[in-house]
Structure formats: C-alpha cells, structure tokens
Length: 313
Image (tube, rainbow, N blue to C red; front, side, top):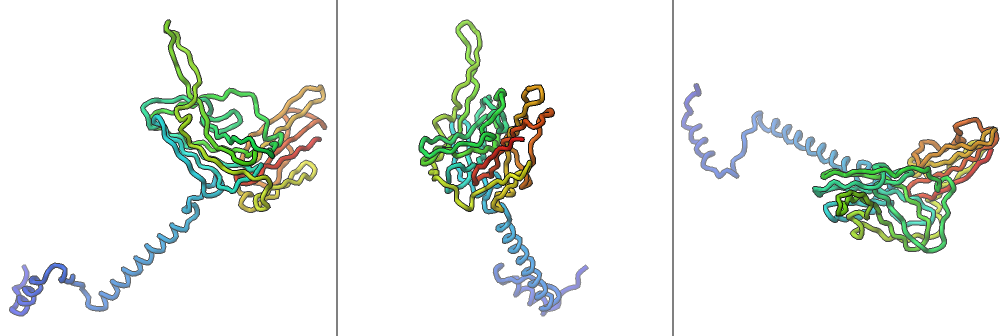
C-alpha cells in the first residue's frame, strides 16, 4: 500500500498534471548521467541503422546490374490479351559480331492456358519465345561454323497456365549493321473443330504478335578494343584472352566431327555453355578417330565479340 503524499509533493503533482501533454517530460531514473548514457545509446543505434542503409545501397547488384546481360539492362515491356512480356537486353553501344544477352519474362495474367511451340529453356532447338535481331544493312558478320551448327530435333512445347511466369535466358548474335530491331517471336497452339466435329491443331502467331515489346538499336562495324575477346591455338589447346569483366561470364560452343578407320562419321556437339576457365581442350569424339578430327569452336560473352576457330588433327 502506497504512503500518503505530504503537502509539498501533492502541490508538485498537481502542477505537473496541469501542464499540456506536449510539455510533460518523461521521468528518467538515475539522474543526468543516466539520461546522457541513454542519449549515447540512441545515437549509436541510429548510426548502425544509417550504416546498414548505406551498405545495402552500395551492395553489389543494388544498382540494377544484371549478371546475364552483362550490365544494367535496357528494358521494354508489353501487355496484350492477359499476357505480359518483359524484354531485358545488354546495354549499348552495339557493334557488328557482338553477342547480346537477353532475359525474356513471360507472365500469364489471363484465365486461359497457352501452349507455346518451343522449350521452357533456351537451347539449340529453340525456345517458347525467341528473341530475333532483324536487320538488312551491310556489312554483315558471318558466324563461326561452331556457332551456326544445330542438331536435328523437335522444338517441343511449353504450356503456361494462368498465373504462371516463364523466364528465358538467351544469347543473340548481331550479324548486320545499321538499324536492327530486337523483337521476341513465338507461336501458340490453336485447336479448332471442323463442321463434322474433327479436331485439328495449328500453330498461330502468339497473342502478343504486333503488340511488342520491341527495341531498335544501331549496330556499328568494328570491335571496340575494350570489348574484344581473342583466341590463341597452342597444339590441342586454345587460350582465351578476354577483358576481366568478360572472363567471369564466358560461353563456349563447339562441333567435333570425326571419321573412324572404317570411314564412318560421328561427332559431338555443344550449344553455348558457360565455362569457368580461359583454356579450351580439344573435344573428343564418341569413338576412336585417329587423325581425322575437325574441332570447330567459338567463344563469347554478353556485350563482347564472338570469336571462333578450327583445329584439324
């Protein structure tokens, strides 16, 4: 049970209660020294918060840089018929023989499932959405043999149900100069019925056709020195010389064609795969080939030139 207040204490309490709420000061126990310690603690916590905010602001990737496209991407987006397609590509300036990196992000906000012609992963047989670089101005760039070869395979199908999102990472070479238009292309499956009830399936342009997104870029001839990758063959090895930023994001494709002692042909193939080395080793065939091996190879990195070569042994 609390003790009764004396007259002096009662007067002090009444005076404090008469003050407006904004003028009342909270009671801090321990006197001035304790209040000073509390103020120092508040300042320390505030300093930590500010430091963490600065650290987050300057953290790698916070600037919007994208590892796949090799920089802060140029972004275009379009919506049509409940579909949303975002396109992100390597920033310019652009040059002939350059390899572009692209992210294609397709979302289905409709109530209709769509079946696309192509795989859900970009590869040699195509993807559900393919980014095309269309231009007709000379000079042109001829891709190395290894970058042109592709296996004979069915393109496959990808169904995007309502609410789903598909992300594709693609590599696109720039093979013509001047004005070039970057535009995603795709086809969807349409099922129709004849008057007698017989169903047929056909591939038709996607509901996004004619709605974008698209991007017009200018491609100049010549490779800037800071964007050049070069190769040096040493026997059955190939050394890669590349700027530091490109060395951590290299891609390699090859074709190994060979003939065995009976004259039968065989070979192996690889489509633009990431590598974590600056030395290439001669490819191998599926069977003993003796001296009859032709190894064609190409190397690149998004934002850098495509370079290739060939070794016969």
